[in-house]
Length: 378
Image 1 (cartoon, rainbow, N blue to C red):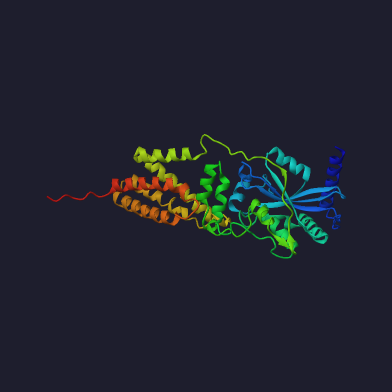
Image 2: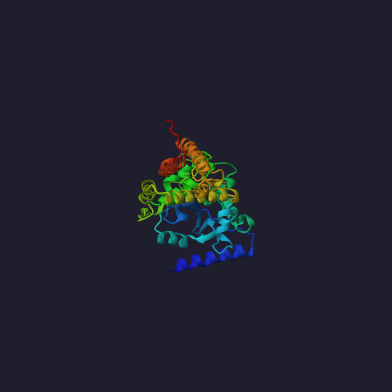
């Protein structure tokens, strides 16, 4: 207990020195270790992909802290709007390792550690760089889902210390970001569906950047520096089996049931409600694409399925303009065919296929209802 109290006291003194702006860095002893920490997947939205941090432990200085680039402030004014727009400021914070590991123990998430095999000079340089960030405006950064997150920031600070692009992606570079992300949503069907249809063309690019914690962990196992492996063998600090949640509604069966209901009821009102929902989602995708700074949301070809123009189709149907209702229905059926052909090689093709089929049934019904009858000549 005394050791814990002592460590926390020294930790607070360290934080105080940072706060007061003392420029003199703590010299690390030869027993100091700097490690990359990889945290396991959770079932909360923010934890689906895991987490990355840097640990600095020095028994001589009674120092054991974790630098965390994934912090944000829920009390930020207009938090949701800023997050959606893509200008929410994230920042780096430092925790005691004891508090950090306790948090992940309570969340039942695994924690892995890979010690960086660096010279004493480079350890000190990395430690000084981490502390300098804490004392400057560099501690804040604008979060980007692929390009700037807790993992990519750790990669950047280590590579900067090593004066080169030492840590680079070593696996799955022939897969798209979308394909890489898709399995992480296991047990969270509607999150998987939602991200599949809201993401645009950027996530269909080849995933050449390290942007997920376990990608970094894998790369560190194979990265060499100055003729030797950059990181030691991975150690398991906490081990938990990830529990895949089950839900009465958050699964593919409710999704298929709703779409099956639309197809089988063969009802005009149900068809209009279905098309209205698609059109409103289309307006949302277009609006977010223009409003947000998140490049992942731009150029969203899924609007071919969720077309805002479906709202015009509904209005034309309500005012009983059969001629133009028919034309707009044919137009959207063509959109649907183009979309289907474009989607065949995409990771999310099969998850949206039931909606493609449902939309096809509904549009064909609209076409049949509004097709001008062929006159019979006797």
